[in-house]
Length: 185
Picture (cartoon, rainbow, N blue to C red):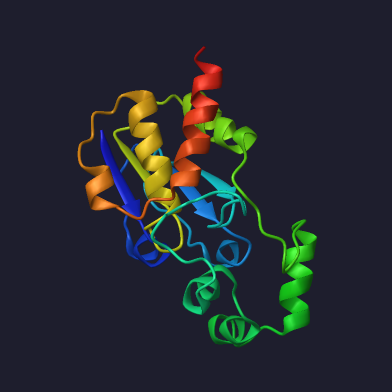
C-alpha cells in the first residue's frame, strides 16, 4: 500500500499510477479547480467540506482564532476569487455555487455521515488498491487527517504520518474515528 497526501496543485501535476483510489477533499471554491485524473483502474470520490471546525472545538491550544491572519485563512475574499478566476464574474461564480446547492458564505463541517460515506465508498470500491491518493487544497490539514484515520482504521501500517503532517485537522480525524467506532462496534 502506498499512500500519497497531496495538495491541489500537486494533484494537478501528478500522473496517477494504475490501481489507484483517489479521495478528493474540496470546498465549494476548490471544487471549481479540481483537475481530472489519469491512469487505468483508478477510482475517484469527491467529498465537500471546509477546513473549519465548530466554535466550541479547541483544534489547537496554541492558535489564537481571533488573530486576523488566522481568520483570513478561513474565508476566500472576492479579490482572491478574481485572481483565481479572472474570466468569471461574481454573478457567474455565485450562480454556479448555488446550482451546486451551496452558498458563498456557508461553511461545511465534516459530519459523521460523510465520514461514514468515505469509508463506505472505499470499501465498496474494493478496498484493495495498491495506491491511495488523498488530496485537499494545501495537503496539510484535511487530507492528512483523513489519511491518518484511514491508516488506523484499515491497518495500512504506514508510520510517521503525524510527524510528517503535524497540522493535520484534529477535528476531521476525530470525526473519522468516531464514525469508524460506530460502525465496528
